[in-house]
Each structure stands twice: as structure tokens, then as C-alpha cells.
Length: 280
Image: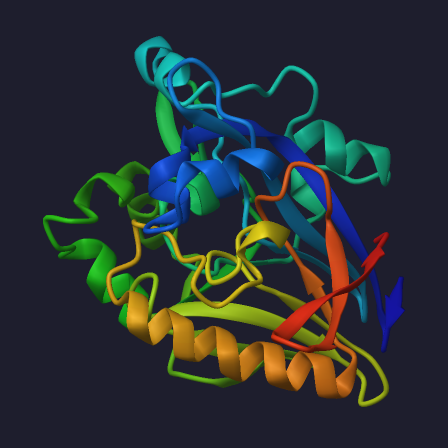
């Protein structure tokens, strides 16, 4: 798919699993288990899908997946699977290596979004993309360095402190243009300072929803994760986003849906609903 100067691709960087109850909050298992069947440990399979934007003399990634730094204990806990796909192999499909990446836009610094931002080289933690600028909202950076007790386990400093040490971090100040044709749409319901990433040329738009709408099953307003810091705010943010997406025919990209990378939405009798899947 081409939007403005950019070829837009979705990349699979692996799979992991989280507790289904936590992923759907107050929604009963009898409802969410139909479309997202749980395993014996009540975990559901989730994608680690990122965006690749190529054009305007740039190679841009939006998020980086979970990475490959977790010890075996946590790999088992989260059922992390990077055998079928990982970040570097998915880049190679497009003839790219990490050294080609010019920019990395991180929606927020939770481990399943920023884990691939750093890696071990010769026993030292370094940025995975040594020529790239990493773009993060200042407010999320500040929160990641002093998180609440509720979300402390999601912010692992090994995923983002090396970016500062290497001088590759760019802190953004609110909504607006990040790069030409690419803008930030801010959301505080899930965590403080999360930025959804919108790519638009005035005729068509793609928005990467990160954790405000992690899967297609979360399109309905009450389907909100138990992880969210401010669930009522998430609901209102979803309402605003989906209303505009339906009116302007935006393509919505799901970071964690194991089956559907993207879709458009429309107004239904009881609210905004899925219109049709989109292949990126």
C-alpha cells in the first residue's frame, strides 16, 4: 500500500501470549473466548506486528516488537515465539538490514513494543538500529522512568536507556508531525503519553493503533484491557478515533491481532463496526 511517498508494509516480528482476562478486562470469557481461544493457562495468542515505511529517502519502523533478550523463564511465561518470524528476517524479506533503518517511532515503551529497540552485542546492550533516531513522546519517557506500581513490570529499562547512552533518542512534545506525512495522535488511557502513528497524504490515511485497539476484537467500546491505567479515558479515546476513522475511511492497523493485520470501519446500528479487512 502506498500513502504519499511511503510504501506501507506490516511486518511480523513474532508471537507471544497474555492472559485473556487481562486483555479483555470486564468482558466475560464466554464472549472473548469465541474469537480469541485461550490455552490451558488462560493465555491468548497475540501478534507482534509493526509497520515499515519506505520512501522519502527514509526507512522507518513503527514499534519494534518484543525483541529477543528475555531469559528462558520469561520466554516460557509469555510463550514468546520468534522462530516463525522475527524482526531481522522480516526486514530481510524487503531487502533491508537494521543498518538501513533511519527512524524508529515507538508508540510507548512497554516491553512488547520497545523490546526490539535494543540488543546484546558482545555482551553489551546497544541500540539495534545504530543509524536510526528513536522518536518517543517526552511524557511517555518520563513515565517509563518513574512508572506506577500497576505498570512497572511493563517498563524495562534495558529496552530504552541504551538509546540515551548512544545519543539516538528524540523526545517529542505532543501531537503533530513527527516526519513528513507522519503524525502523532496521543492517547493516555492505556499508559501516559502513548502515541498512535498516522500516515496520511490527504487522500488516504493509515493509523497504527498500538494498545488503544490492540486487536479487531477490541473495536467495541467496552472491550478495554485490564492493563489500562485509565479505562474510561481509553473508551472516550476509542470513540473519538473510530468516529473519525469511519467518517474518513482510515485504515486501522492492529498491532496484536493474530489473524487480521488491518481493516476499515463503518457506522453500524450499535456503533462503529468492522467494514472490511485490509492487506498491507
